[in-house]
Image (cartoon, rainbow, N blue to C red; front, side, top):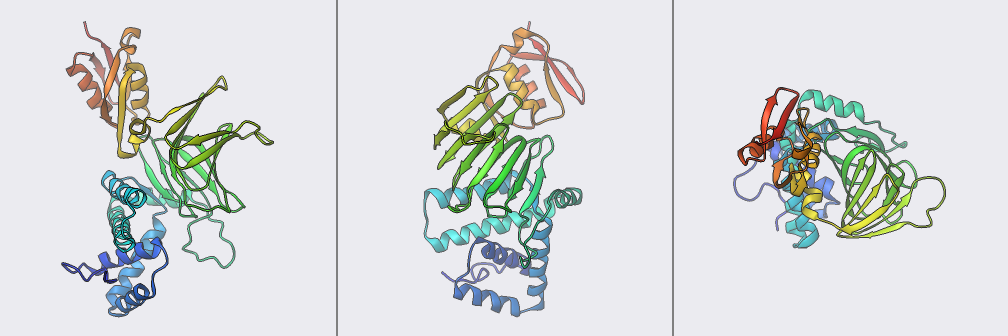
Length: 352
């Protein structure tokens, strides 16, 4: 395979080629042939140098990027291919670089200036002497508002997807890679590092992993850990060693309630991580629980006017931020009727 990103098909612009080269630089160490091809491309035109500098500057501003579903799906498809198919290294590296490049290019025009500034303000860098200024910060705080999701790359290359109204604090300055889930929900794809454990603290528990993928949801009276890939150990966060840690295997889920009891059950993968695609999956769930889940993603809340309606069972797949559409669907199917709707709430009553 040729190492020149622009040698097949219609020749891309300098900006597109710069994005692809940048993604390949971040994807790992370039071979000697690739490094030489990049040097030749960069020296071929002042426009190439300008495009490269522009991509570097853009990446520096986008430590936190707002989620675009099309780009999230593209990146996830590349990750899935890397994990499950093990395609030829050259083809896979090309696909990963192209996907990352497309994501970077689209984010360039999708992220409002105000959100870019907010991202910059939320990240605090503690860089050892001599570390390149472009290195991702070792300490940072990231949060999302209601209805937002965000894909964040941490200093070690791990990726974190934050769900609606969520916040994390990461600190990689010590011997551990430590992330604290302050509120909400986050999906972690952990870069392998057997020397520095990856620890997610959530409430009174901490989840310890080496190289794995898992979801953590923190609620006032409940903690849930869904293990998609690999293995994790879950311990008590309070001082001293936990004599009874829980070892989770891939495809299992831990639920811990206010009573301190732990329950490990098989993981319903579709339901557990559907939120990452902007969808919520319900299977014969109480309407009260469905409404509560939908309300996490919208400032326009669904209100149930009577207890009988709250106990109705609902199945379906809904857009996470589509509370209005869901209410209309319930009405169309005769499950409930809309009795009042304004900017802040939609009130549902039982059908007569």
